[in-house]
Image (cartoon, rainbow, N blue to C red; front, side, top):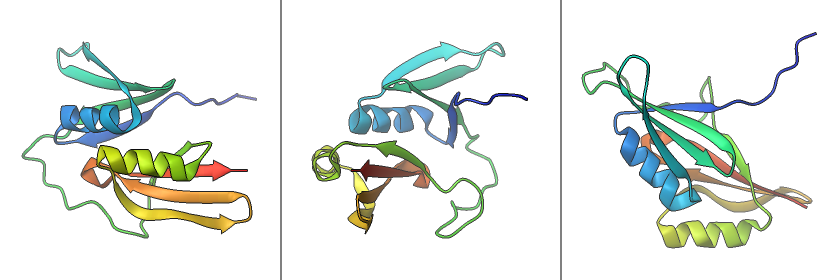
Length: 128
């Protein structure tokens, strides 16, 4: 039986470097720039061992705006934190926009959602 394990998250953006700088500013991501085999520039992030790839969407692409809640497909990805209030305060100092402020969803579990560029949603999750 095959075994599956995490490898990466792949985001698309009209401004990959702008997206990368957001993650660098908010989450202390390390930006890794390289050239793909097809000669195109590539931007990857390392967020404490989490691999995030950012691909450019052509400026002339015919795209509708990002879907709003609820929608089909990838809804968000999450970062676990030890102290949600501390993480939220730190992100607000850095300029993060919160889609959902920190709240308790059940005993021992608190969440919040940050809205990143291109309407990417990031959940912050504290489990006690």
